[in-house]
Length: 504
Image 1 (cartoon, rainbow, N blue to C red):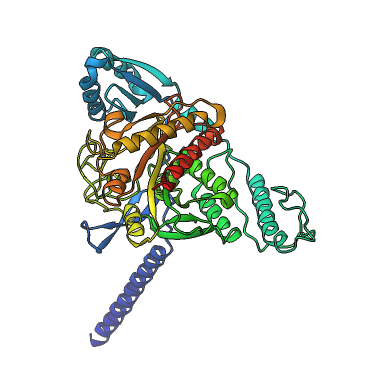
Image 2 (cartoon, rainbow, N blue to C red):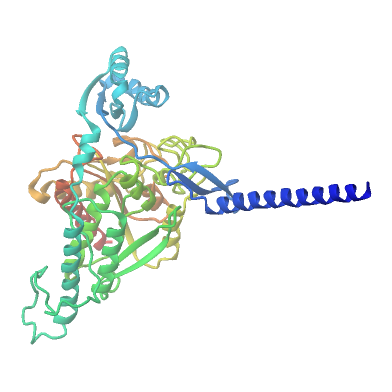
């Protein structure tokens, strides 16, 4: 009996060890599988704030954004008569609530809206009931987007970058060895290698040209190229980083003249306004090419909203805001041109993170606007003007934007603004008409704008928001063939304001 009991105990012990071994093996397999698990590319792990102004973060997983398409969507221009001003304004608010429309741009008597293909019949009935007229400006928005930017091939871009590198070398060597290179100014982009050996280049090239719209890396690479190639004229500084960590690069252009007035120029604060960074970079090119005759210093931020700008290339062509994730909301982004610290949160803004005019949680809550503020607080430059380029509508706007009021020196702003309009009309022979006026009266009220802040807090004399082409035929999806004609108009504006600054 005792022997049988010992045998039974031994079998039980062996079985227990076997059972535990199986459990450990399964646990090990599960653990190994867990360690080897690869996150699918449609899932994104992100850091999200737990509370506003808190450094505490939590790990979160969300479905990665899919690319937004606008197949069959249309752009409508809704217009009202003089006695329908309030009606048009009210309908603009209704657009958001009904889901029929997405507001593109507008004022008291006219709004441009996006109408999704499935909402076209219902939207038409809605406007007829309101006795409002409309016309279709863009019949197929996605097709307009697809045709907007015919980019160069990778091979063409690499060749372009190589030729620019040779040009950088020529500028550096030909100036020092005039006997060997007798021409005072060589062909801009020599096709054959001036070294003759075809070896590796130690000179940086760049990929910028103005027959297409470029990504952020190309724009920043161009600024670095200028700083390296023309160190006596150009320098680059990163004044801060965006929400997603991208640099905010400012280029200084100066030939060192003492007591020269300084002008600030920025572009791309609204992500979808591609013509703005394109025009600003072309202005840079022209200023550097003619730096010998400059009588002012220029501080230029081509892309004030780098995260949003990149997002328009990768996810949503018509994205406007930055990429800040709002606490307690599924919506993303702050309108940076409502986030500056003068009259923040007033007319023309929203506290709803889902609205395109969301002003943020407070003045200068965003790293992009905070970086601009900090730059000016630290700068010793003799700033006289603040020019911010936007699109679209062809306006030259001066403060105030927060309400239908004007600053004490509005007569000077209006006079120089009209000179700017005249110069822009003459530029390029296109006879483009630009409307001059107070921001809130001419277009719409918008509190917390950079122009109001520059005028009120920085005490800039000449402060303008310039809305570039066009007047609505293409809107935000202005084809790339219009970059240089529009940029010539923008440069004309800069030159007029520069001349005005010289007399201060």
